[in-house]
Length: 410
Image 1 (cartoon, rainbow, N blue to C red):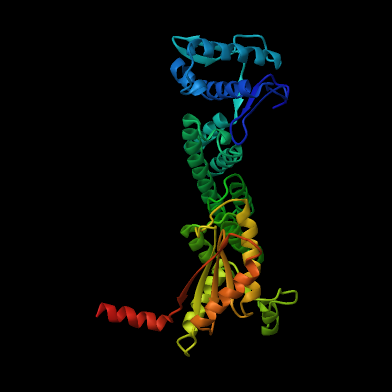
Image 2 (cartoon, rainbow, N blue to C red; image 1 turned 120 degrees about the horizontal axis):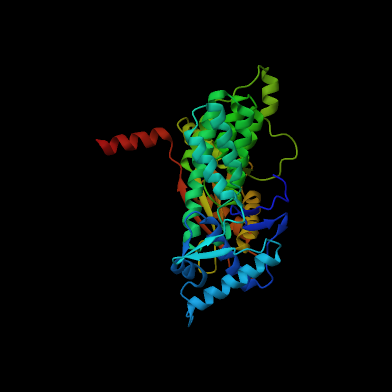
């Protein structure tokens, strides 16, 4: 559609906005603008059913002590009509009341992204032609550009709608991915996964992208996505990826094949290469997990002593720090202190915000205590009140663990 089509365009997903002939419909006063926005959001989203006076008063004023709440609401509606007229909309009765229910006028057409999303998903569900259904599902997915009224999470009706639309979006993505998988349209499947992860992050959509990359034989890109995903979940957000995501990524990773190469070429790719920083081996969690399991198996051959250490940033009271602007800086400093304190053959993983795992091979518990002092010397400065909390466990080889389990059963 053209911009100057005399349609009030309303965006509910992500940031709320209204435009008329390409120009924003806004106000000047921040407090009045908030009430204006609340009024327009509920009225425009409830065009079919309208909004009762009691509900509208509750949304606009909540539990504030107002002497004449009916008069206050009439004042908000009056000012809203003035604002709409000043924005260039035709001079009509924008908001009408009938039997205690307020409605948006039918004289001014509205295009609302949330309503369009509802329309597309409903039509897609009833479509029998797979190609047309796929088009509808993809159109619906791209109509969803973020959380429904993301700035209004504290308003009950908006939060309820946000949950409903999030569930609908998830269903659309899954159905579109299923249809793309059936038609083996992996390039579009990759694009779908990337889009879904962008508008709804931390929801495991990386699995769709990785499946597409593996299916197209783009194994190096899949490996990079694998590493970046773990980096995002573990380091940037301080969260562990879900069990479902880790399971799917591991399963898809096992499908990666390679072109025929001679051993020297393969070994060259396995080598770290130049420019590796000094100190321990800093690696993502899946790699750390693999090293841990391999070391546990190798312990069956000899009497190596291996320890797992957890280092956690704590505040002045010894309580683990979980958030805050200072935590990022402290985590980075702790990482440097650990990396320069351990041996080159020890493995390090940033497990979460302010937490690091260390796999210390061929050492003793006394050496673990010495290592903790080295880390503290590099991490603690001046009158710093924060510190590091340490936990150490001995790594038991798998054979010993199995024998112990068998003994307990007997």
